[in-house]
Length: 399
Image 1 (tube, helix red, strand yellow):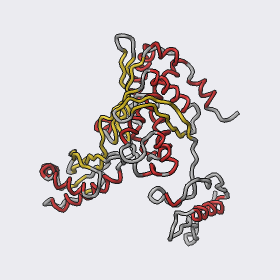
Image 2 (cartoon, helix red, strand yellow):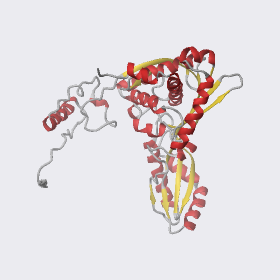
Image 3 (cartoon, rainbow, N blue to C red):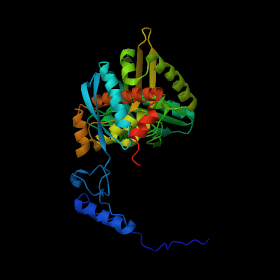
Image 4 (cartoon, rainbow, N blue to C red):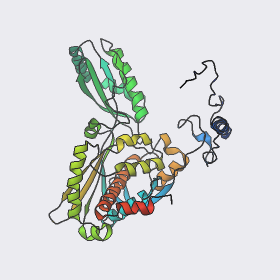
């Protein structure tokens, strides 16, 4: 078989850009025409959208159109939270048949019990730089210096942001390195970019003020941005939020076809399975509900990698009722900034009463309530034997 070498002098077709204003309908059309010329594909559906490209700076580059993901409506879901209270209709963007129907069934179960309790118990966003030293002793002494100079570090970090607040700096020693974990509150923004900028300013201050002027790398990777990690399960990244309910047989059996005792025995089996697999989540499918909500409301969907991590804790009570909780340890969400202000995403947040400043904790509680609804529905479906049949009925779009 012979191979053909590419001529390095050959011109590669570049994606067209308008240097004066690249966020216009004409610029998007030019790029779709370019795609057609290069690939033969006419982007007729991609090119149909209802908003002005002028709203997109800061959200995307080389805009050509939209990915139209269907949005279904589930609910009402009754939530009794610190921040979210009342009945909520939930927008869920997905292409997975049965998902909305399943969550809808779980929401009915929770609402029939008077609602799901939801509580945000912690809230942090991190950046984790690492400082380098000649040896471990110098790194240790740096740690002592850092604790003594925390006020100056905090002032440097917080000078870069109106709403970010540096709560603490944790330290971890490895060899001649000192890993730091800066913990911030970030208001209603998810805050990854915010804390990156703040931590850079803090590190520059440290390097300038410390007698040894040590070298550093802005991310030592123990914040595990957009990656699951055990450290975030323990210490929280984003919102740590708990959803909980006590289920009664008298409501469970008619709606779900299972008993509390059956659910408890199944929980013991699935708990062992999750442990054996080394899963980041001992529940059923938290990522489904979170992803569908994230797409609908303009969240950074890559954050599902962290946000789906969860721990289910359940009890079969002496009276036969079933206490069921799920703790989302690393829920990263926002109601301000990022994609939340785009037209369709904003509408979905407004449906929930969460758009803008003051909505992030409320939205986090709604996310947790939705997740628990999905857990109760899927777990019951597996036990009752209608998991596969429901997918056959609702989840197939081909003959």
